[in-house]
Length: 359
Image 1 (tube, rainbow, N blue to C red):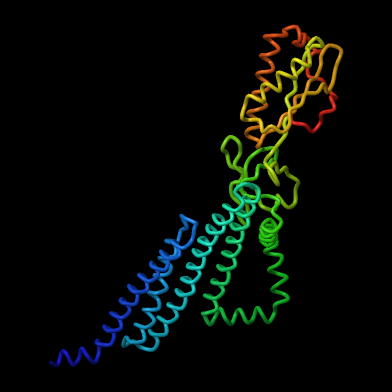
Image 2: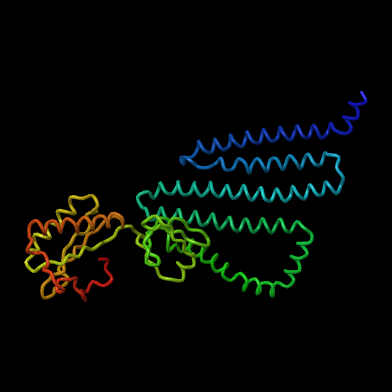
């Protein structure tokens, strides 16, 4: 009887609160799962990573339960205050964690939702994906900065330092501006890329004479996947300060050229019809452009340029190689006299007027 009385006086309330906290955690966790399942079944987009929200939500519910439990435990005031401070810091971190995971879910939702609407417009879909990705990263940076600032301001010493800095904000701003000049320029360049979008995820670009596809855009650098599967890491300020080629800015369709050097005896009409037959027979051609012109002559050779079109750069490369190979076979098999004669005079012509074209 004495044990029960002492138990009621010292531990009954904490044990009751602990059981209530566990019940709160289980009920909140179950309700949150039901809400997620309801949202998932009510929207058309599938594969949204709602499960990413579970652990941050569990942490926040656990912190709420701990706050209730601490007030019922027989602790000294100093220990209770220390626990409150620790729970406050964990709450800020938990909220930031939950928001960052929520941003990921929203990013996936926006990409899936709008990608279906602009499925026929690949360039628009890439712009939406880039906007969503960079916006999430910018919000993450701001959220981390706010969280770190909030955590530091919970300490009295740091708060006093912060007030002192605010009192001399002019001098501090100048010092920080010089110290973080490059970092601020990089961050501003990332925001500018997100707004103006000279590049988007999936764009085909030429940077430092290397052709590749934009694989990832962060606030500080851009990852370009090169044609041979290497990755070129480029500072994001590069795309603001320097010129570069974007082959799919508004459309992935491209024109390409194939140059041949033949003798004057080659029948151009027959060669032109063979070019049309070659491109018509392959799905690599997008049926927009097929032309053949004599672009230059010398004393012993004729420069013939074939112009073809394709839906993207990969198809264009394969199409150009196919046209070059089959035209050469056609000339060898049917008009061997049309092959260029040996000697220096039969080498590719200079000053052909085709500067700037891809040969």
